Image (cartoon, rainbow, N blue to C red; front, side, top):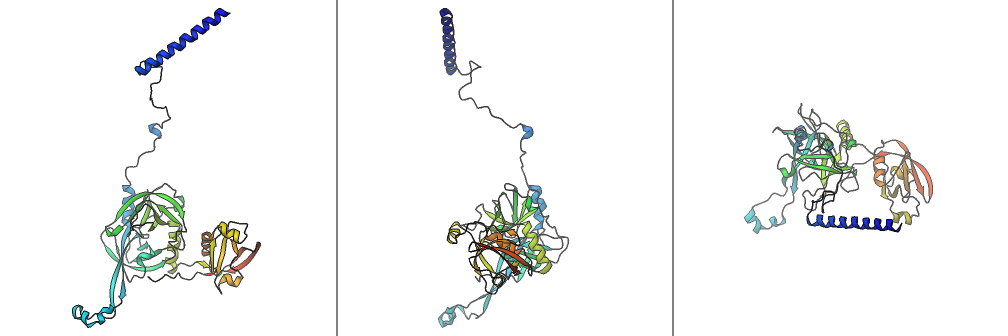
Length: 387
């Protein structure tokens, strides 16, 4: 038995010596021994075969060609009164500059973009592009320039509808924005800085952006497609050339593109456009309350055990909520059975209610749940601050 163990130990030792010599030989002469991995050899990984590879898209020319004829340039102008210079009262200055009229006026011109949405001549653009304009000209992609009139606008979504007296125009096809996903390729088409129609490409960076302080009702598509001044009112289209949004704003510290642009989705565009064409304006519900989100600090201050809902910060005297007995400090949790997540959601829910309808509002007042009935009124027109 002792002899057998001795032979086994000698064999193991000999094998170890041979392997050590082989490793040393391969180190000095890499690849001499094929059964040993060479130093620095790549790690074996799983790779997709050519049949399963994502095909590269080298051009979006078809999408651009399809949608560009529907995008127009908009030139709006308005007359502005200029206050007389007080120095003109001095005879010395009048000697050199002559007499200046007391009520001088000058015209200012605004430049933007728009989208033809009907062969009959309806054009969508931003409210701020045509705000207070007394003259609107639309330049088509074929070189024609046509006069347009304002059908109506909605400052709270920054949308406006124009009408040209022209038929057989190239109208853009609307996409279903509910199918839009983060990462989808989009093209922004407009007239940035007045250089002419321009197409830029990017992706959908985010959906449902709100509480940005741009407009009252916000539900933006965020994109990194370059949007610059002059693109306002232009088209955001998908990779097939269908309209998914109206470009309306950018986040910028310099006035130019920084990769964060916002477009109004066609789901909102269609609702606003249909109302403006039908009745010249947009009708929304209103109950006369000022609300704010429930933060942890507010919840602790009011000893609230809920984090959802909206805190009633103010009640307009004589308004629908005031007549129904709603008080500041109440927490509104549901409207007509529909739960309220935050103040932005509450604003949208109430705005969607038809004026004249009586709806139950669920509240929490001093830890006690209660329900009141409110008759919805028509939301008053938004007042813009004078610049």
